[in-house]
Length: 384
Image 1 (cartoon, helix red, strand yellow):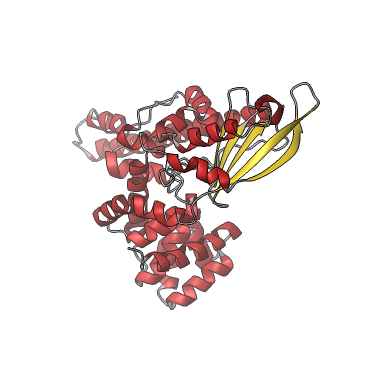
Image 2 (cartoon, helix red, strand yellow):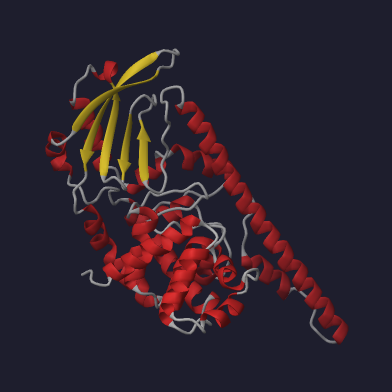
């Protein structure tokens, strides 16, 4: 896959002939435009290869799992899933339901719960970096796309379920609900699976918010973003799951999409456009910083002409989910120009802006997203 760097474009421009006449200026401008067009095309091709690799890895892995599971589950932005080496047992951390499900082959474990306890302890102790390494979809896609797999550093050594103490595993198992069900067997028959559903601590969401609050405050101050808004987006995007991954693909706590937010963030942070690797975005600190930078870009660049700060916040929340162009179209009817939309928004009261976005944003997902994030932002303003 091509490595996309702005520096290569800049180097090419530096080698351009000195501008000494109007014709030279015109040639220079034409060459620069061509270079920029080629640059954008290369980036789009790079990201498309990246996305194709993830789609292919996802579909192939899902098909493999069908030999053992009627409903193959793969990590997404609401659940983190790990399978045993033979794919017949799995651990599912469901952040939305606030529970862990340990699903084991009854025959292989002899119906014993100690095997499930071992799996539970294993999941509770899993460092983020090891979880990334064990994520089949990510690893297959990274290899196929030719992306780098850098270490996640100190952040990668933190446990994915850092809010759960490993020594409490036995006590958690005492609260488990046990059930059995039938699943496909590799020979075409059926096998029995024992399911232990273990509740996560009721305070998990608050605990995770407190854990990430120092980093949120640091980057919020640095990039002039409200910390409560960052926490609300993190809560809504991933339920504070550092391993969150969506089909787009988007990654990590704040669900950064490499082709949109990632592109702008890389330019802002590194002075060059690059395709962020999953490992970079699974690093909680990298992800929090990227989210803060992107919110600042939306607020101070794309939507800066909206005069009222509350109205602008509603537009920023919506744009984080669906893009500034779709937000603009909600007010203009057909134009994707944020400047044209701002002219209309500036004649409206903030509540009117909110109601129009809730009623007319093009996707129901974004309409619900605005409601969730706005309400959670208000709640996190009281958070300490």
